[in-house]
Length: 221
Image 1 (cartoon, rainbow, N blue to C red):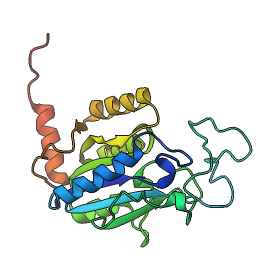
Image 2: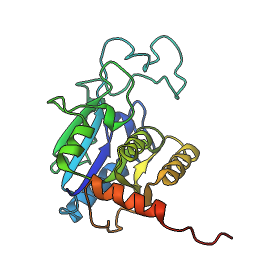
Image 3: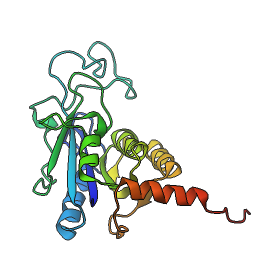
């Protein structure tokens, strides 16, 4: 039980000055640290993901090693395992991160759900083991890995909040579209200082969804 925080890919290569740095990435790192310091009891579990790509090869076509990257499906080399670019941004405090997930080892991977812990556990397995029905999502990039991670959490039957002041995207238009997509799929888009509702397990989430579906529709304009 309890609420889980997903911290998606807050890495040096995805923040200002990195291989694929986005504007606002450093501020997101600092803001997440502040959130955890100010609300130490909000989350039962904190999970952080990192791209952890192989140094050799193109990682399943993810790296544009022989052509110009299209910045949609192919990308410049970034977040290579063991390099400074793959490390967490220094403004992100890791003291409260209990679970570290690595993804993209030799293949493209956007969602945190595609990664594994050092013990080979998936995030879906952990959420089930914890009985966690509520997930908050923060990190980088809004329009790619945050979108994919939040979308997979919704598909896994979790109640999802995206903290809009603690995400940073590649482009304003695609970031806005990503948040709109997630809202339409059932996620709440909220500020990080908004107190979350009481957490429940996945059974409570499924029950709530059923009740909302059964509720009569209000009048239309």
